[in-house]
Length: 237
Length: 106
Image 1 (cartoon, each protein chain N blue to C red):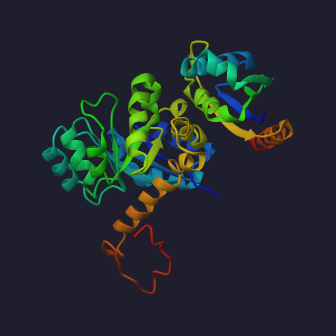
Image 2 (image 1 turned 120 degrees about the horizontal axis):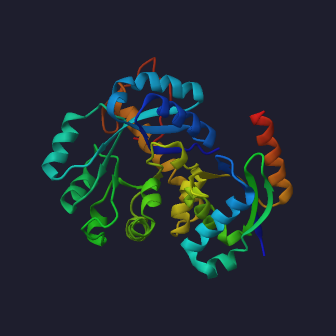
């Protein structure tokens, strides 16, 4: 059975964040990646426990919106190892090209009308996944769809695509099937569309959890001991 | 023509006709009059107390129907969300899912 992930939910206040987590469990998600804003940043462990009670595995997300390559690299350096998932909103080509290749970055968000063209040249450099935030679609459908179509057509075959809610409100959360309907309508086959809310984000989470664990030494190298009996699939490594 | 049945819940609960109109209008704005006409999108049954509706659509317009449903953010001027809770190939299947959901809520 598939496990579903909402790769971006926004926690702003404790009560609202708890309601979001319960709502996600009801919608059928098993994992959620939360960006913690304002006061919530310090209460991640508490939220993780609440989420576990609701049946959700909660992970931390950092969303960066740098103006330049230098700023992006500085932010990545200072936040290394603190978050399970790092997403970069690419507002210019310079940032997009760096974020696309940096192994510390997990996903890129290309905003509608980004001021640069996504062509085969850009596509050839992208190694990280591209994320489509559904709340952005709800906010400005036409511009979002124009950009999403380009992403699916040009990048869709080369890189992984993830669809997430990107919302702090319960009424803007959507179920996995509803999120997957976006790439499905834009041309993905059904199974591949469902992967955008399940397999692709799960692989990133598992890989990053492993990277953050004590067992990780370097890419492809793990410390194996008596306590570590859990098998690790080859595609995570 | 193959069809699919969708069980949709509105949050907060709204009258089935209002929900149906919101879905149809969202479908029309996304895919046009011709798209709506060829989708065979039809309200089959409404449950006012639960805010649930059962829709029918052509199999090949299923992703479009789900996207149109997910696009609804407002019903009757108030903030709302529509959730597709089940999809089935038969009416009997969807009624069974509704019964299961009802029993899990009570």
